[in-house]
Image 1: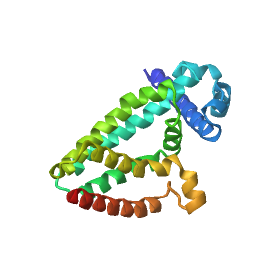
Image 2: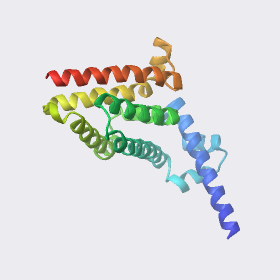
Image 3: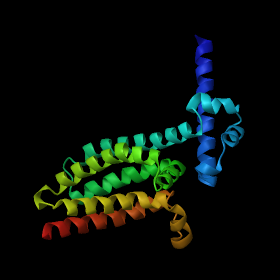
Length: 214
């Protein structure tokens, strides 16, 4: 029994090393610019283990993408249930943005890689959009309809508001180099999150006022 636990722990350590190396190399060189052999070499494991654990480079990519979205949607669902109780619309949207930004900061390189990959048009991206991102859309619609139920929003108003809100949350991790090199901001730093959330709160307050006048 003890030997089994040791083997399992060793296997998990090897798997984690492969994931870490793959993410590092994918971030540096892009998915197409990295070979399975390079991943195995960086992780210090036999190349056959990449196929053993993930079924190859494509399986590893799918694992990384799914891992990000599982955590992202779990954060979205858990936070949404809490903030929808006895909070103003602006405070609710700010708190949710805070938790989603924290999640992406904690998994900074994974977030950056996944968002970049999602800009391509391929079979995997289409599958992820039809599953994870459709669920994200459903959760956002549910939230916005709850927060602005008195405003009788037209569908197009609701959808544009959601797109804008989501873009505020995602953009720092889709283009972190733009933030750093052009505006000298560090999206991975806690100080960035604090200042950015002040702006998101102002945006949310303005959205609430505009929708009330609509």
